[in-house]
Length: 322
Ligand code: BEZ
Picture: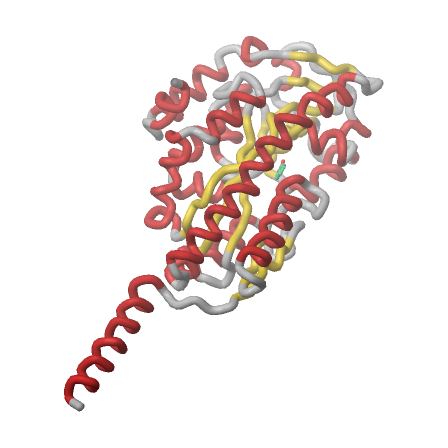
């Protein structure tokens, strides 16, 4: 009798240790937020991740995707991830680079010379090693990177040299490395979230916008433009995040399943941009306006000044350049 009691006690203890060590599996409906509209490549990748996680988990887990900033802007989504009020998000690097400066290095002007090189950088060990800093530095788990193309400039007025941009209000995505680049050029960078951009360019609230080729074509940002500078001056990564609080509640198997599938669908965005970017650039070249192709020399000293400033903030820039 005593032996049976001890064996039972041992089993219960073992079970309790298992569930403390690895979390306990339970069906969940995760919420994933992002700012892009439903048809955007990032949102499509999030939807595909949701479908596949549901299948692979035998319908145990589902993911509800909330596009178009339905759950708030990126700063608000980041706070929700930190508190555990939101489970997952696909975000630009704005919020993580505010907390962990190394991520700002991925916005170094002309870090990638073309879209393929941008993909290689985002898949590199150096880039992936930055993710390890996120649980401690930002209260989130970084699962992997995806891609949002290379940045171009759409201007209401003519632009022949960089001097034509000086003093001009240029819409930027609100974060530091991009703001620094436009400050170095001598423009007045104007932070503005995506949904406000079309109207702002149409009514002259800004003189130009910083944007990627896909959205220039699909959201018709050329409607009110005179010139598009095809400059490819910066890449624009997306990062897949899971709340660290939520992560701690998951079993090892669940973590493995989520990170494998989320990574797969984030990486698929890199393939999509590599395949489609040239087509969008061709569409832009065919527009009835001034399309000017420029390289790093167009921006003069601004690039080396950016580099000097940011190499003081992060050591990883040199490694990424290699
Ligand atoms: C933007 O703010 O320019 C942007 C944000 C997310 C995806 C693409 C562009």
